[in-house]
Length: 403
Image 1: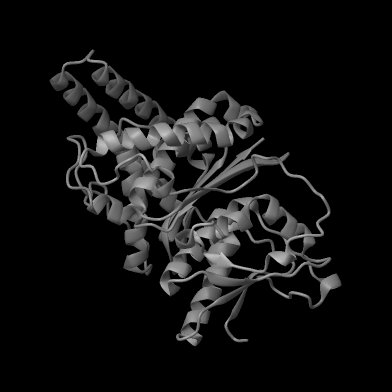
Image 2: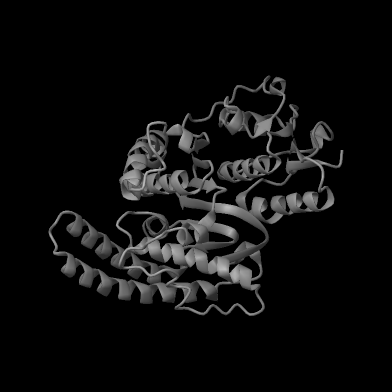
């Protein structure tokens, strides 16, 4: 059958980088050659062939990405897609891990409208009995999980508070134990819980799709990823009818001129969208994407990756001096917001002081953008900026923190 596309290739670990650079290319090739056929996935490349000469591995934090693209394609075809399974010596370890990580439960939710894949459950058995931590499972969050909340209400602040109060409980229940397993995340576990709650809240309210999240701890790293196939960063900002006094729409875009030589303008625009949302996040009263980046890079010596459309940035401590100054200014901005909310600052005083801090953080932000561009290379594996030929709808965050 020409409409079968393998997911995990033999002897190639299915990582986020493999997903962006190889797997999405496979999908584009399929749709170019099979415009009128419905895609069928084979979980393992060689199936029951070459059993003793094959091996399959999947990086746990790539699971939310895989679920996001499958959900996107099932919506395109307006039906659950077919997944072919194999249970043999070569596939058993990966199959059992995915089973215990709730991958199969997530793709075949009981509700018809949320089922994105169909498969033969008879292949899910005869496992080795391996156990994984109960926290090492993929989570899904969607509007339907909040039946008592009116998502059509006009008061966005009240809506956000309602959703966030529920997601905060879930995030604490789902991820707190894993955060305590790493000394670096343990020290700031409350901050991580607040940030993850905010990101999932954003996904539930704005993405118009399912938000998938997974956290995984081994002896080397704490990793987690959050993925949705929603409306993306640019549309999230463009759909806002008003902005707070401290931010003007497309402020970074109108300030900086990115020169990446012959790079396609569409790619550069996506890169600007990423910087724009991080800058906006650095000014807000709630901790969000910017604060996640700061906590991962400055306080945990880790890697922060943010993917939008067909562009991704990778931030690490090699630009530490700029990140440290951004962290200091961000804490000052949060303090001003807190004082204002507590009624300890007159509004005009709050406004003038916040705009003063904003001018400084904007200047530092321009520096970090230029510094990041210095590390741009066409060699995808080593660049701080990655451009991919295939557009992947939505917003996707990946974090790696060394133990």
